[in-house]
Amino acid sequence: MVRLDGPVDVDVEYGITMLGCVAFVDFGPHFNVIDTTGENTLTGMVAAISKDIDGIVTCLDESRHGLEDGEYVTFSEVKGMEELNDCEPRKVKVLGPYTFSIGDTSNFGDYISGGIFTQVKQPKTISFKSFRESLKKPEHLISDFGKWDRPGQLHLGFQALHAFTEKNGSLPRPYNEIDAVEVLKLAKELNEQCEEKVELSDKLIKQLAYGAAGDLSPMAAVFGGLVAQEVLKACSGKFHPIYQFFYFDSLESLPDNVKFGEEECAPCDSRYDGQIAVFGKEFQNTIANFRASLVGAGAIGCEMLKNWAMMMGLGTGPRGAIHVTDMDTIEKSNLNRQFLFRPNDVGRLKPECVAAAIAKMNPQIASRIISHQDRVGIETENIYNDDFFEALDVVTNALDNVDARKYMDRRCVYFRKPLLESGALGTKGNTQVVIPYLTESYSSSQDPPEKSIPICTLKNFPNAIEHTIQWARDTGLYVN
Image (tube, rainbow, N blue to C red; front, side):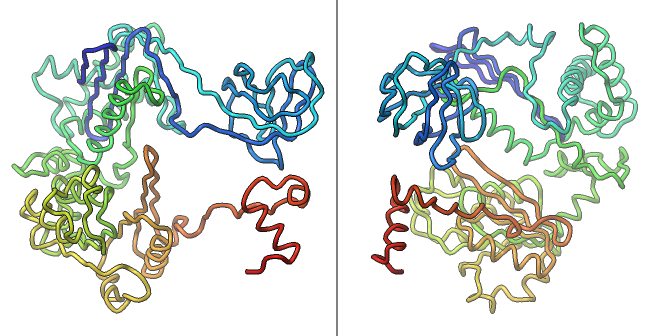
């Protein structure tokens, strides 16, 4: 639970159990969001504006405007319909990717040419309900439209777990059938008290109970970051907050062909007991003997290594190993996000420092982590050779350039090794799991090619550097 006292009353509560998580956000009855998206202001060039009750704006050269219904724009450099220049923000109704309506323009002058539209971001006031009110009539932010009915069930499931804990003094025992049946009974009783009944899945609620005592480091890392981001939203007023409840689960991560038992998932006085409670001892033994390669030891690389070595035990077994590859040295600017490094590490090689930091966190990994300072590429295939790749079980990319990503993707496909691809930019991120000959590879898709420049734009209205270069090429004044 996070509570902040100040100009805005902030209440962010969250819970993580096994493969399910919940966050509840309450920023008070009148919370102002200054910027709902945090994106750069959109702008574009106008090709035409109709003089009628709808006021339809068409963008130049079929350039997508990127606007959404309800947003606002203003105009400049419009010839003819000059009433729009520096006008009060006008509400947008999107008609298509290249056109939008701004309302009645029938009393304005006739449009002649030119014009630039600029998005005007409007503050938004959000009224949150208290936790007590929301429990009875919850508002859910959907995390996966493939599981649209899941939040309502998880809402009851988490309440049932709380009721079970209050009654018995502890969470349900891992994969204990008696405890799971009791949790299911409590969930059904709570459902009967609801005004709007939820169609409960017995299997789902029991799965939630089976692993409730579990603790998975990756789930904690992801959801902890999400909750921290909500606190930053409350402090800054930037980005749209989660509205009330957000439920997330990854129950599909449980294998279908394995039936877990209470003995298999019982604690064994290990630092990995939280993970064993969910996936069992056999799974723990498997990943302990995994041989993994991490390419890149920056922000994502530090997070991956922390999860692998500190809490998961990846590569800690007799056969296990973790190879870390990065040719960069640590800079002062890295310290704010690459948390395995310290000020006295500045100037040192990243692989050496992360290996030392991880060994301190988990001594079991000290002799299993191998650092490499040579970049991956064609020129180092004598180092990262056939023997190197054949010995691996999985490869993870934490790179900052596309060429290296594509190279590793090709190597993994060739050697038939699973690849986890990931990247981050500001508040955005992406992940892709590549299983050779089963899923699409990273190199199989790419950004669409740049559009050709219409000849009318080149001759009559060049408005970008690329246009002038293309014009010079076409007239013979410039040759590559």
